[in-house]
Length: 438
Length: 174
Image (cartoon, rainbow over all chains, first blue to last red; front, top):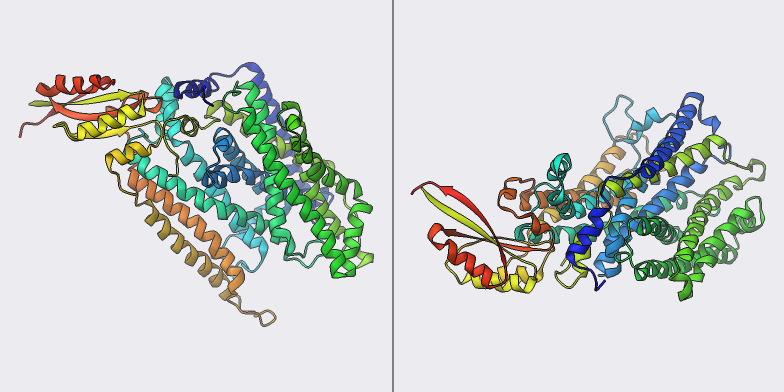
């Protein structure tokens, strides 16, 4: 990063905000069409009934909740990078922090849709809100599902505010170099930021508090998501390891998604001098670490099932690698724990092709992890005559495709209209200046 | 009618900006503001800035949030007249989780409120005496002087390697 100057950083990032070409709008259009297709599937489900999904008795939790957990997980590495690594003073986070934070905000939005979709009669969602009502029914906050409502809405609010606050100085940079209507818009959204010493004094302190508050939040949110399962007396779910296991898995998948998003952006926006190969290598090293934790958690689950000598637990953990969903289980194990070990080789973790390819495998593996956890446990509960199988229907696949399209649609709009790399934090990595949060 | 001039010295080097700040504090020209593209310890030290009070807002928000969350859960539980399995209506462990999430939420609200209050944003009048280069690579030092001192202040910045931007303001006679 020694070649970088303040002016070069500004120029590189501001160049990405130039009017896009037709290919960009075509891609945006295709993604929007995909999102509309997903919305169409949801509307069809609302009009027809939740029976159009493959969920049944006993598998009442299907891809909607798999996708919910998957997207919440994706959201987590954004906060890891923007908050936890900020507190740890890891300089390599600065080039990717903005994109990761944005990924967090959009991923939580997508995740938040799935409980609504899963509800079926979505218009009754207000039952989850503590508002005075004629039914004399109030929410039961002893339920982990109510913890989830509070945790996810807190996470969305906090990560959105963190994202916007972090962007404030950069919005002023764009304002100062824009003309016409864009200047007017950025003047308003930058709130009159001038970088005056009084502003920096409070801003740096406030940003530090944001990071300090987001850190326990991110750990609590996925712990709460894990308790949706762990507090249920279902074999394979009712275990104390779930909270750390889910948090590690969330960060594992989120870091992989960071690579999946940043590698194409780096190429398309000529960010090679900002998002250096060392930055991507650091992400890959962290993926090794989270992959090992996830692998350890997989092993611990099997060990505890054997060690407890609980026949139901032992049965479910025998079923997972050998039963109806064995393929999903082995995809999970190989993609999440074996393939990331390739990053131990420097040659692999410094080659774009391998970084991108392995990140895709981890994304797939982490989706299957949620599939295996949710489906195998409820399909083989305690009573053999109540066992059943599940496979997603075309409607569920349509909604899933729509969710992915919506996520990439939002992200694509973001990278061409707002600064996708934090210019201020990049400048802090150049000789002058100190840290945001000092 | 006297005219007060505001002169901004623009420096690309942080150390030169800091030495100009230190020198201007010993001069007759009052220092109005300093702008920088990044937060800077050196500038904070040169200006002798105190620690921000944003944290008090954050703390107040966090404390209020914990009680709001816990009491919300306790209130909704107390509305149930059917006691299930003899379990306590006010259950400490699960309600602590709700309290925790609300602590974070309200602490962040307090933090944002503190930032808005302390930074006095949104505030667009500050842009009238502002040089757009300050968000790029320049450190801007804004000082005030009377018309007869203008050349002296300009020379002060120029001899320290700064560029100049002049703003003027009509003043009512005393």
